[in-house]
Amino acid sequence: MLGTGATGELRLRRRERPWPYPIPADAPIEGGANSGGDRHVLVVDTLHWKLYELFDAHPMNSGASWHAGSGAVFDLSSNQLRPIYWTSADAAGLPIFPGLVRYDEVVERGLIDHAVRFPCPRTQKGFLAPARHYASSDPSPSLPPMGMRVRLKASFDVSPYPADVQVILRAMKKYGMILADNGSGWFVSGAPDPRWNDDKLDGLKQVPSSAFEVIQMGTITR
Image (cartoon, rainbow, N blue to C red; front, side):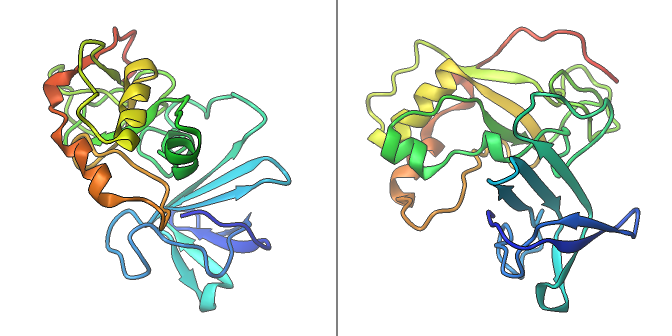
């Protein structure tokens, strides 16, 4: 999902004109090269403090150019939000990378100091800041809006879980999770790393949805 490299050409499906995105020819694609899912590609330019994110990305001409359903560029030196009603590579219009769980945080540092992104199968036609976009035609107030924040209840006992999972759960208590896309319910996204121990991470599946609470929401934009 991550990569750096020389500037290539990207064609966004709706605009069909080239944009300069520094996508390496061998950039990893979410789900693999033959994936039928969201096919996100994330590129971090550490020299220029830029984050490039693509949705439904497909390499063309052996990776010399790429075709994507949407793309977004974020300035990592700024907290400025995208314009209202703008989507990104994520339905909520938020950057994906900052909400990922990473190996260096969980295992090497033992600390996650940010909110974690999560999707939901059905969402409301509306969003809360810092989200900028919705991805639903259903205005039902019983459905969650994009940008909704939840947190693990302070009373939830994390001690029975593996140490790696405890790091993630403590972050969910302190910083919470933010609804960023439509998809599998309560799915925690992580940056791929061969060093992950999937058996330990499976402990997250044992956390019930009832262990979470919604943080007070402000005005919902529709």
